[in-house]
Length: 115
Image (tube, rainbow, N blue to C red; front, side):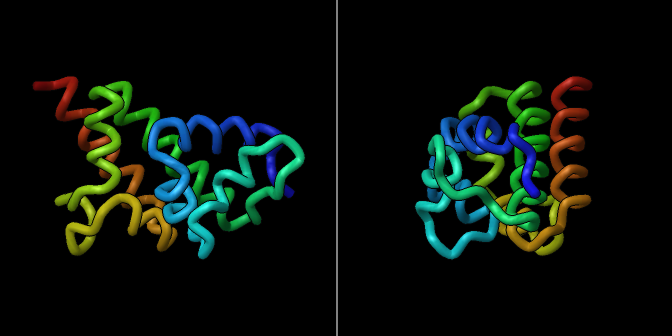
């Protein structure tokens, strides 16, 4: 069962990252899945995809609060030194490495606020 707020969460992430990236980070094989998830009366993500979306949303809010939305978008798609293998956040999130994603977001935010 997914939260009724999942539609708004998907809409927010899609506005920030685009539907293809949101679909990918959620682990969907259809790159347009986020469009369906955000539509009134559309399909809803399964439990695993919802977990991925919730983690991505938390990371997005942390990073975009510390930096600009544009910097946060780049943070999601670029190599990240705080992730195993310097993977992108998109890859780590899709693989369910939530602790790493949240830790990387917090590391960026801590650095932004201290420097």
